[in-house]
Amino acid sequence: MNMKFLLSTQCACLDEEGNAWIFSNEINALFYRKLESGETEYITSFDREEFWRRDLYTDAVWFRGKIFFIPCAAKNIAIYDTLQKTTEYITLDTSSDNYNMVRLPENRILLYPVRESPNAYIVYLEEGCCEYIFIDYGKEKTEIKGKLVRGKAYCKGKAYFIIDKTNQYIMFDINTKTIQICRTEKKVPLFYVASDGEFLYMMHADGCAYDIYNENHYVRTCYLSNQLEKINSNFEFENMEYVINTILEDGSIVSVPMRKQPIVIMKNETVIRFELEDKKIGNYIDDLQPLYVCNYFKNKIVFFPYHGNVLVIINLETAEIVYQSAVIDIMKYDRLFKNIWNRKEKWAVLDEMKVSLEVFLGLVYYCKLNVRAECREIGTKIYKYMVQSNLKGE
Image (cartoon, rainbow, N blue to C red):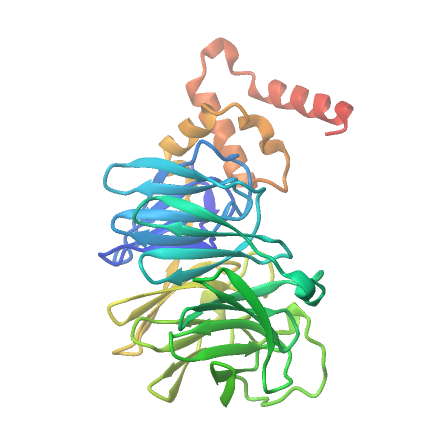
């Protein structure tokens, strides 16, 4: 039996050998992938989180053989030790939230809320613990009311976050744990900010360009689209050209496309465009964000699939682009279904918003093969469960 499953993600990282650790965006499952061969292995699921929950984690941080998984729908930070094959957790004091994750000096990361919230954390990677921070916005609270803030910028002792569709940004002082809301010199609505530690790179809300700032002083604009300036002011997410910038270890700035536009890399003041082949990228949800997570290893950039069907690997030395299918045969992973079978909430799969048909049918098939002969009336059980759920209004 062959059952196709797309390993889409917004939470992945590369290890010290350049291989990928990918957490599924669809289910509670961590996979390991050898990038040379594409061979993929199911590793584990995290027992403190629901199995059928989407968007459990949005970032993965590799640190000395351990992976820190940054929560979104999840309740805890999960720490998977790839050497010991064990999992530990850091329990957060507040309810589930979506965080901007900023790398800090001294093996720390800052988790700053995307949505309007006073709750932030500093995670100490070496110690495996975190510090809760209450963000006091004071009189500035009205400036972020109902807005989203986005960014991964750390520069000269401060973290920076754009206030969505404004020319305002939050400057968070790491030492004093205080904030200041500032305005940019250019009155351009913004979406996202990244940094190489020296300059700030602020993506325009239309995704056509980003501004370069030396602290609060405008330097210049880097245009990503052939259309230099959009005449209209329709800054809806779906209309963006590029969505985020990622800063590589060598200082290159990678602009990740919102659709299937070229990937744009700024390296040593030179703009390089890598055209993508539409047919190879594919889509499984819509035309937005086929790629999202961007990692770097030895002159290669790896883009992981979000709403697309493939991993894209770009060799910066040869300019070669490799498309690697992210579709796997879910039925190969017997341990995955054994894990599901042993969980109490396994039949919650009947909510189609939580799990794909492929995984559901895989579980039914596994159930058929592994229960006692007298208990194999699976269709009857599912039918009864569905009837009971409908009567209860679930």
